[in-house]
Figure 1 (cartoon, one colour):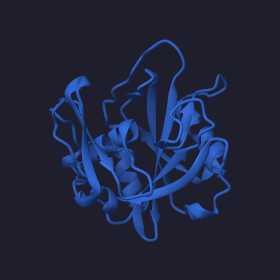
Figure 2 (figure 1 turned 60 degrees about the vertical axis):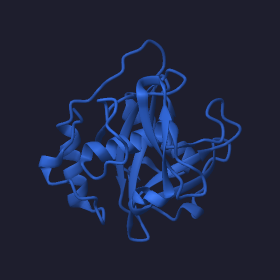
Figure 3 (figure 1 turned 120 degrees about the horizontal axis):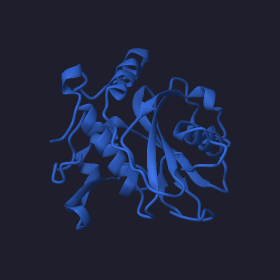
Figure 4 (figure 1 turned 30 degrees about the vertical axis):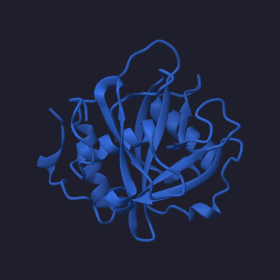
Length: 215
């Protein structure tokens, strides 16, 4: 059965993100029985960063450069592989956020951790959920051009627009994952899977069939 927080009065897609919203998400994540992936070797962490952009609740995405070792040119969240000095997944995600976007980690209010996922490379990925109340305009960011080619945002409304969203089906695991086409680059694969699952667990939207028992 798909887990959700429908009983926490969060089943309406938010129209604006504020401290009260952040507190509800933090409480929901604290009560989540997280699915954790334990595998030998290095792990990765990503930052699901929520912010209001032009007054609309949105998520921050990056387009990876062609210079990085893996997932060249793909859309992703800020994040990457853990370093030995990283204390935990949150430290990894925030360090990568600083390195990639050129912003201080202190602008991010960490709300908690979401279910682990597995990248196509087999690397376990921990999503760290964050909120930025005062996100600078993305076209003014001094981001790392070695790591990313662009930073962009998609509003909740754009994600929820079924004229700008398709579904990609994967034979492995009989999995259906949305493809969000509202921006200049499609959000698909693992990144779209995490977005889809997060919104479904929070009770904000249900974009794909619950055909795996995992969403």
